[in-house]
Length: 510
Ligand SMILES: Cc1cc2nc3c(=O)[nH]c(=O)nc-3n(C[C@H](O)[C@H](O)[C@H](O)COP(=O)(O)OP(=O)(O)OC[C@H]3O[C@@H](n4cnc5c(N)ncnc54)[C@H](O)[C@@H]3O)c2cc1C
Image (cartoon, rainbow, N blue to C red; front, side, top):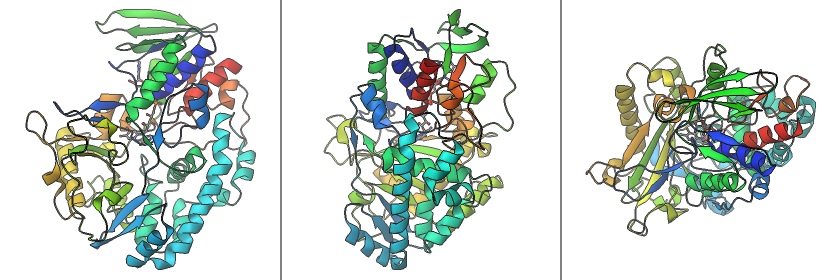
């Protein structure tokens, strides 16, 4: 159930292994949070509407399923204007060590070059040690401890803030490091739950390098490739088919689902592989969902521009600044302040966000009329915007959050981004904002949590022994014949196909 990219991955593996597979997807399209869409009326631009970069999809998934998927490396890693003086900023150009060093010096952080490089080398070691494990059964915590070496103390035993503050001294540089811990995760650098540490871990290990690449053709291309693999192997894919109840028994599961016109169907399945969030699955199984439920904390803004905005920093070309991750008001103290404000139920005064431009790396998502004309897509991911801020007045709160976010962005630009927006066929600016509450409605993500629930360590915790294949692969539920295959499984979260593959492996093994 669920035709998100993970459900499709599981379907492709299982169908290729000769199983009879029916995928039931509630929406009128496949892909879940991994989709491209023409968001603006009459405008020929296929935006990656929700997720946009790929890092965590193992080579094995692409090779084993024969996916025709091209990922392109971004030329620049990141650009971060100095909040107190946006006429200067830090440009991290992975291909040019000398330019990066000079940029550190320009913002007065020359002393952090060595610490930054050492942290980069260490995360590289972590990625190379841990990422190869994601295509096998879960390591035990002892095995993980041995693989992590000194990282174990840094990541598993103390809040990430300790490491960040030890590694680098400059507030801006610290902020750039910390953002990897906060994407899709509402936490402080010092949160005792260590959810920020787990988020950091997943953000730096992808592909064994931690690189975040642009899928050529947008996220829709990822899903099209998976749909092709699943269909070619014989899986039946049904959209507008919402599962409304699951009745597991000793020999199989009765699946109750309804189609577009409300007709109820009952299908007997040997197993159910569930790509929805665990909280949704609990409801379908008649269990009381755990409290508190998952909560997402991001504002997502999609834009189409007629030109890239000019920067206040005269030394950096906007085409370089926007080619990587453009950090806005993400200094270490700013991130902390925004977290505290949101935790107290307030909209952050200066919302931190990061921006990506797909079309600088891959213009193919633009129609011929827009390509080569200076038009660019921008996608903004605003941090520390928890669902609780949007519950009471979803439309009003979204408008206020968007206004504050654009104000924050405009503070580091030489011209308001609004002046660069293209217009749609109705003369409206090409700008779409989605809060966590919108994502709950539009994509079925409970609380708008982009990972279905907070990320778990990618190993068996606390010396737990795995008794079943599903437990060994991190996809177990309370019912033997129901397996998780979505982002809420262990090693889920992100566009990876890992839980989809794990569920298929567990089912074929068990
Ligand atoms: C705004 C945003 C930005 C993100 N950015 C990135 C990024 O750049 N890179 C990255 O790696 N990750 C990113 N993520 C996270 C990533 O997109 C998700 O973790 C991933 O898409 C989850 O895939 P999935 O297949 O497990 O679940 P989903 O994509 O959530 O799919 C689940 C599917 O199940 C269906 N479903 C639910 N209930 C039922 C039911 N009762 N019956 C039938 N079907 C049902 C849903 O309709 C949906 O299609 C982002 C997510 C969001 C929302």
